[in-house]
Length: 260
Image 1 (cartoon, rainbow, N blue to C red):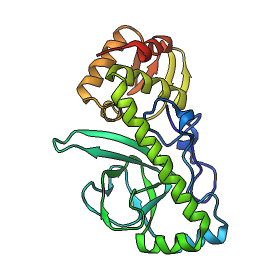
Image 2 (tube, rainbow, N blue to C red; image 1 turned 90 degrees about the vertical axis):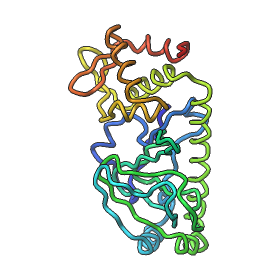
Image 3 (tube, one colour; image 1 turned 60 degrees about the horizontal axis):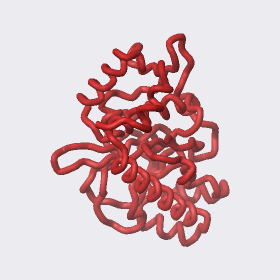
Image 4 (tube, rainbow, N blue to C red; image 1 turned 120 degrees about the vertical axis):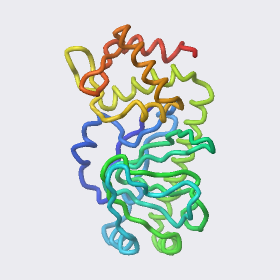
Protein backbone atom coordinates (compact mmCIF):
# COMPACT_ATOMS: atom_id res chain seq x y z
CA UNK A 1 0.00 0.00 0.00
CA UNK A 2 0.97 3.64 -0.14
CA UNK A 3 1.65 5.74 2.89
CA UNK A 4 -0.34 8.71 4.09
CA UNK A 5 0.50 12.35 3.39
CA UNK A 6 2.14 14.69 5.83
CA UNK A 7 2.15 18.47 5.93
CA UNK A 8 5.33 20.46 5.29
CA UNK A 9 7.68 21.23 8.17
CA UNK A 10 6.02 24.45 9.29
CA UNK A 11 2.54 22.94 9.30
CA UNK A 12 1.38 24.85 6.21
CA UNK A 13 -0.78 23.17 3.52
CA UNK A 14 0.92 20.77 1.07
CA UNK A 15 2.14 21.99 -2.30
CA UNK A 16 0.03 21.62 -5.45
CA UNK A 17 2.00 18.55 -6.46
CA UNK A 18 1.40 16.90 -3.10
CA UNK A 19 -2.31 17.67 -3.01
CA UNK A 20 -2.84 15.63 -6.19
CA UNK A 21 -2.61 12.57 -3.98
CA UNK A 22 -5.90 11.37 -2.53
CA UNK A 23 -4.13 9.87 0.46
CA UNK A 24 -0.50 9.56 1.19
CA UNK A 25 2.59 11.15 -0.20
CA UNK A 26 5.47 9.26 1.34
CA UNK A 27 5.53 6.08 -0.67
CA UNK A 28 6.79 2.53 -0.48
CA UNK A 29 5.56 -0.95 -1.22
CA UNK A 30 3.95 -2.70 1.74
CA UNK A 31 1.29 -5.36 2.21
CA UNK A 32 -1.00 -3.62 4.69
CA UNK A 33 -0.88 0.13 5.38
CA UNK A 34 -3.21 -0.19 8.38
CA UNK A 35 -0.60 -2.30 10.16
CA UNK A 36 2.00 0.49 10.09
CA UNK A 37 -0.11 3.67 10.02
CA UNK A 38 1.03 6.93 8.51
CA UNK A 39 4.43 8.65 8.67
CA UNK A 40 4.78 10.98 11.66
CA UNK A 41 5.97 14.56 11.09
CA UNK A 42 9.12 15.30 13.09
CA UNK A 43 8.25 18.94 13.81
CA UNK A 44 4.47 18.70 14.09
CA UNK A 45 4.29 18.56 17.89
CA UNK A 46 6.86 21.27 18.51
CA UNK A 47 5.89 24.81 19.50
CA UNK A 48 6.76 27.66 17.17
CA UNK A 49 9.66 28.67 19.43
CA UNK A 50 10.96 25.09 19.56
CA UNK A 51 10.81 24.83 15.76
CA UNK A 52 12.77 28.05 15.42
CA UNK A 53 15.37 26.75 17.91
CA UNK A 54 15.78 23.51 15.96
CA UNK A 55 16.00 25.16 12.54
CA UNK A 56 18.64 27.65 13.79
CA UNK A 57 20.96 24.69 14.41
CA UNK A 58 20.49 23.38 10.89
CA UNK A 59 21.95 24.13 7.49
CA UNK A 60 19.47 24.61 4.66
CA UNK A 61 20.23 22.98 1.32
CA UNK A 62 18.39 23.24 -2.00
CA UNK A 63 18.58 20.40 -4.50
CA UNK A 64 17.42 20.14 -8.08
CA UNK A 65 15.75 16.99 -9.31
CA UNK A 66 18.31 14.23 -9.73
CA UNK A 67 20.87 15.66 -7.31
CA UNK A 68 22.33 13.37 -4.65
CA UNK A 69 21.63 14.24 -1.02
CA UNK A 70 23.74 11.45 0.50
CA UNK A 71 25.48 8.35 -0.84
CA UNK A 72 25.63 4.77 0.40
CA UNK A 73 28.96 4.17 2.12
CA UNK A 74 29.72 7.87 2.62
CA UNK A 75 30.33 9.48 6.01
CA UNK A 76 27.16 10.03 7.98
CA UNK A 77 26.34 12.95 10.29
CA UNK A 78 22.84 13.64 11.62
CA UNK A 79 19.66 13.81 9.57
CA UNK A 80 18.04 15.79 6.77
CA UNK A 81 14.63 17.30 7.47
CA UNK A 82 12.60 17.65 4.26
CA UNK A 83 10.93 21.06 3.94
CA UNK A 84 9.61 20.62 0.40
CA UNK A 85 9.91 18.18 -2.48
CA UNK A 86 10.48 14.44 -2.51
CA UNK A 87 13.55 12.33 -1.68
CA UNK A 88 13.99 8.81 -3.03
CA UNK A 89 15.93 6.52 -0.70
CA UNK A 90 17.42 3.39 -2.26
CA UNK A 91 19.91 0.59 -1.71
CA UNK A 92 22.46 -0.46 -4.35
CA UNK A 93 23.83 -4.00 -4.43
CA UNK A 94 27.52 -4.70 -5.13
CA UNK A 95 26.45 -5.57 -8.69
CA UNK A 96 24.75 -2.17 -9.09
CA UNK A 97 21.15 -3.38 -8.77
CA UNK A 98 18.88 -0.84 -7.06
CA UNK A 99 15.83 -1.28 -4.87
CA UNK A 100 13.80 1.75 -3.81
CA UNK A 101 13.14 1.74 -0.08
CA UNK A 102 10.78 4.72 -0.03
CA UNK A 103 9.92 8.17 -1.33
CA UNK A 104 9.86 10.63 1.58
CA UNK A 105 8.11 14.00 1.52
CA UNK A 106 7.87 17.24 3.51
CA UNK A 107 7.75 16.72 7.27
CA UNK A 108 9.75 13.49 7.15
CA UNK A 109 13.45 13.12 7.85
CA UNK A 110 16.02 10.98 6.06
CA UNK A 111 19.60 10.00 6.78
CA UNK A 112 19.13 7.57 9.69
CA UNK A 113 19.27 5.23 11.39
CA UNK A 114 22.30 6.72 13.21
CA UNK A 115 20.72 10.08 13.96
CA UNK A 116 23.29 11.15 16.62
CA UNK A 117 26.51 9.27 16.02
CA UNK A 118 28.93 9.26 13.12
CA UNK A 119 29.00 6.27 10.82
CA UNK A 120 28.39 5.52 7.17
CA UNK A 121 25.17 5.72 5.19
CA UNK A 122 23.52 2.33 4.67
CA UNK A 123 21.71 3.55 1.54
CA UNK A 124 21.52 6.58 -0.76
CA UNK A 125 19.11 9.50 -1.11
CA UNK A 126 18.48 11.61 -4.20
CA UNK A 127 16.00 14.36 -5.02
CA UNK A 128 13.22 13.00 -7.22
CA UNK A 129 11.86 16.55 -7.47
CA UNK A 130 13.25 19.97 -6.61
CA UNK A 131 13.76 19.93 -2.84
CA UNK A 132 14.64 22.02 0.17
CA UNK A 133 16.11 20.21 3.19
CA UNK A 134 17.64 21.22 6.50
CA UNK A 135 20.62 19.21 7.73
CA UNK A 136 20.72 18.78 11.51
CA UNK A 137 24.21 17.55 12.51
CA UNK A 138 24.34 14.66 14.97
CA UNK A 139 26.07 16.53 17.80
CA UNK A 140 23.62 19.44 17.71
CA UNK A 141 20.67 17.08 17.28
CA UNK A 142 21.66 15.12 20.41
CA UNK A 143 21.75 18.35 22.43
CA UNK A 144 18.40 19.50 21.04
CA UNK A 145 16.78 16.13 21.79
CA UNK A 146 17.89 16.48 25.42
CA UNK A 147 16.41 19.96 25.66
CA UNK A 148 13.18 19.45 23.69
CA UNK A 149 11.26 16.28 24.71
CA UNK A 150 8.81 16.59 21.78
CA UNK A 151 11.73 16.47 19.34
CA UNK A 152 13.15 13.37 21.03
CA UNK A 153 9.74 11.68 20.84
CA UNK A 154 9.44 12.68 17.17
CA UNK A 155 12.81 11.08 16.40
CA UNK A 156 11.84 7.86 18.19
CA UNK A 157 8.45 7.72 16.43
CA UNK A 158 10.07 8.45 13.07
CA UNK A 159 12.69 5.73 13.46
CA UNK A 160 10.05 3.24 14.68
CA UNK A 161 7.90 4.02 11.65
CA UNK A 162 10.83 3.59 9.26
CA UNK A 163 11.65 0.26 10.90
CA UNK A 164 8.08 -0.96 10.33
CA UNK A 165 8.17 0.32 6.74
CA UNK A 166 11.37 -1.47 5.81
CA UNK A 167 10.26 -4.65 7.56
CA UNK A 168 6.98 -4.55 5.60
CA UNK A 169 8.90 -3.98 2.37
CA UNK A 170 11.12 -7.00 3.06
CA UNK A 171 8.03 -9.12 3.71
CA UNK A 172 6.45 -7.95 0.45
CA UNK A 173 9.58 -8.69 -1.56
CA UNK A 174 9.92 -12.11 0.06
CA UNK A 175 6.32 -13.32 -0.26
CA UNK A 176 4.92 -11.82 -3.50
CA UNK A 177 5.99 -12.53 -7.08
CA UNK A 178 7.25 -9.65 -9.22
CA UNK A 179 4.03 -9.73 -11.26
CA UNK A 180 1.94 -9.53 -8.10
CA UNK A 181 4.04 -6.65 -6.82
CA UNK A 182 3.64 -4.70 -10.07
CA UNK A 183 -0.14 -5.19 -10.07
CA UNK A 184 -0.23 -4.17 -6.40
CA UNK A 185 1.85 -1.04 -7.10
CA UNK A 186 -0.28 0.04 -10.08
CA UNK A 187 -3.48 -0.29 -8.07
CA UNK A 188 -2.18 1.81 -5.23
CA UNK A 189 -0.64 4.42 -7.49
CA UNK A 190 -4.11 4.61 -9.04
CA UNK A 191 -5.66 5.06 -5.58
CA UNK A 192 -3.12 7.72 -4.69
CA UNK A 193 -2.80 9.71 -7.92
CA UNK A 194 -5.83 8.55 -9.91
CA UNK A 195 -7.70 10.98 -12.15
CA UNK A 196 -10.79 9.85 -14.03
CA UNK A 197 -10.38 9.48 -17.80
CA UNK A 198 -12.71 8.23 -20.59
CA UNK A 199 -10.53 5.11 -20.85
CA UNK A 200 -10.23 4.48 -17.12
CA UNK A 201 -8.13 6.06 -14.37
CA UNK A 202 -4.95 7.97 -15.19
CA UNK A 203 -2.05 7.70 -12.74
CA UNK A 204 -1.30 11.43 -12.75
CA UNK A 205 2.25 11.23 -11.43
CA UNK A 206 5.63 11.09 -13.12
CA UNK A 207 7.01 7.60 -12.54
CA UNK A 208 9.20 6.09 -15.28
CA UNK A 209 9.46 2.39 -16.04
CA UNK A 210 12.80 2.46 -14.19
CA UNK A 211 11.10 4.01 -11.15
CA UNK A 212 8.47 1.26 -11.13
CA UNK A 213 11.18 -1.39 -11.56
CA UNK A 214 13.15 -0.05 -8.60
CA UNK A 215 10.02 -0.18 -6.43
CA UNK A 216 9.04 -3.77 -7.27
CA UNK A 217 12.55 -5.21 -7.44
CA UNK A 218 12.67 -5.88 -11.18
CA UNK A 219 14.53 -4.60 -14.24
CA UNK A 220 13.29 -1.74 -16.39
CA UNK A 221 13.09 -4.12 -19.36
CA UNK A 222 10.87 -6.52 -17.40
CA UNK A 223 8.49 -3.70 -16.42
CA UNK A 224 8.34 -2.40 -20.01
CA UNK A 225 7.54 -5.87 -21.37
CA UNK A 226 4.95 -6.52 -18.63
CA UNK A 227 3.18 -3.19 -19.27
CA UNK A 228 3.18 -3.92 -23.00
CA UNK A 229 1.49 -7.28 -22.36
CA UNK A 230 -1.05 -5.59 -20.09
CA UNK A 231 -1.74 -3.02 -22.79
CA UNK A 232 -2.31 -5.74 -25.39
CA UNK A 233 -4.97 -7.14 -23.05
CA UNK A 234 -6.42 -3.63 -22.48
CA UNK A 235 -5.70 -3.87 -18.76
CA UNK A 236 -3.73 -0.63 -18.98
CA UNK A 237 -3.01 2.00 -21.63
CA UNK A 238 -0.15 4.44 -22.05
CA UNK A 239 -1.11 8.04 -22.74
CA UNK A 240 1.41 10.86 -23.00
CA UNK A 241 3.91 8.90 -20.90
CA UNK A 242 1.26 8.26 -18.25
CA UNK A 243 -0.39 4.96 -17.36
CA UNK A 244 -4.17 4.58 -17.57
CA UNK A 245 -5.67 1.70 -15.58
CA UNK A 246 -8.59 0.35 -17.62
CA UNK A 247 -9.39 -2.91 -15.85
CA UNK A 248 -8.58 -2.61 -12.13
CA UNK A 249 -10.53 -5.79 -11.42
CA UNK A 250 -8.03 -7.75 -13.52
CA UNK A 251 -5.14 -6.15 -11.64
CA UNK A 252 -6.86 -7.19 -8.41
CA UNK A 253 -6.86 -10.79 -9.64
CA UNK A 254 -3.22 -10.53 -10.71
CA UNK A 255 -2.26 -9.09 -7.33
CA UNK A 256 -3.72 -12.03 -5.50
CA UNK A 257 -3.02 -14.94 -7.82
CA UNK A 258 -0.17 -14.19 -10.23
CA UNK A 259 3.06 -16.15 -10.32
CA UNK A 260 6.24 -15.55 -12.32
